[in-house]
Length: 295
Length: 302
Image 1 (cartoon, rainbow over the protein chains, first blue to last red):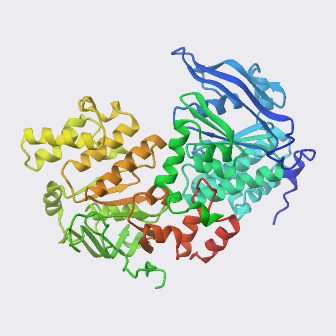
Image 2 (image 1 turned 90 degrees about the horizontal axis):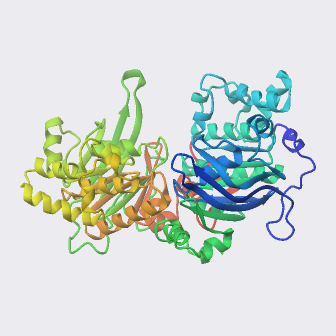
Image 3 (image 1 turned 180 degrees about the horizontal axis):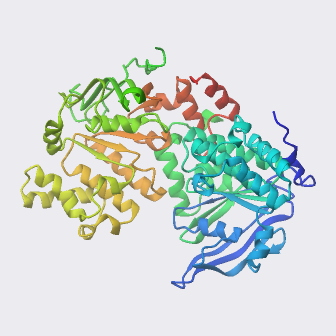
């Protein structure tokens, strides 16, 4: 196995995995009463989203398309489409309110503090550049590595996301890789600069179920090893249930329910959350897998 | 070929042996609506010719819902296309309500389609609905082509709309003016209007949000109760589990397992099925942990 030191070197001081209960570390990401407004219609598309996330913690955001989950993530990443703006509340990353940053200041900060992977990995890679070079570019720009070091770093990152033959993948073009492999490459790119927060926005939605399980395992493993905080966005409550300490259910831009995962899943309070749970219990595998069987 | 022989359900039913659902009104072991036997399909020509389906056999009994599970590249869509006469099999037979169709020519297929006994719903409703036709025309066309008088067609369209819970004022709209969920219900309505005996649904809920998924799944359950046979194709065991009587699993062009939905999910036999069940996210976490899944993956042919 290739050495994985670079990953842990990123933040040697960081505590590995904070316990979900009890003493929580200082928040690395906190959204305070976030409000996002559509400049064209003047309407609020997201309002009142409020949560804090400490190192090593995982938050799940569940909602259907148009619920504002992606806009919320984009606000946290400072990449809201021009049509939208943050009109209220704050987004703090490691204590800095980032809603007021200039684009230049943002670019400095991004990737080494917060990073993201999205649903369609192929569209985030340049089709005509080998994937290794695209990861190395992040290392050179964000970490100031020399060409040679960046190349080795890229191979190590490809190994860290468990691509079977990292040396081979390093020299391949995006079209030569499957969807699951591309998502691993994107994750490698996203963690290249050692972010403290990683957002996975529907990152497994387009993948086969067996591949989805592998990617979810990978995200959990990287979180546990590096202590980064994870935000998992999905339309599927079960995907979120797999990984997250807390869940936030969004509907039409509003938080309808929020709390520890077990509480939200087993005692949903809002009708909408109940619908999400029902979908699984009546129509999913849960219909056959009764609680006593996995006790 | 061991991989080719499906792991039969404990009840000993052959791959796709009919297990008629309890609530089919008094139809004794009838001719299956769909019987596929030893189906081979190849893509490409000459040197590029490669098998997509190999030795696939399955049946769908009247009023039964068969869930067909397969991931990317398993050949599930090719199977649907073969049943609809859109790709020509290289071996094997396909019978629809007792009629051998695998050797049909274009003209025979047209005649068969006109009778409307087999219908389909795709993942993207824009593929099953003509984007330029209003919902009303999309629904009326298969009836008018089949020789149904206009007045009767109008009544049947109203009835089918109620069945899929679409409001009548949507009739004048084109698919582009409907929401995703409405569009998929319109596609289901179009499939139902000819009163088919078999509806093939290829990933009908994969592109939909929870609320719309539940709506469609509920409609499918009602159809099953009303005696319409369904071939429900999906990559996701989870979306099929609740509505299928039996489940068949397709892996790299071969049927590796089939049985009742309960047996396949609670007692999967083939390593691939066990991997599928073990990977599906549930509200209680994944049924199998990573080590277990890796062990299963190692058992699959490379």
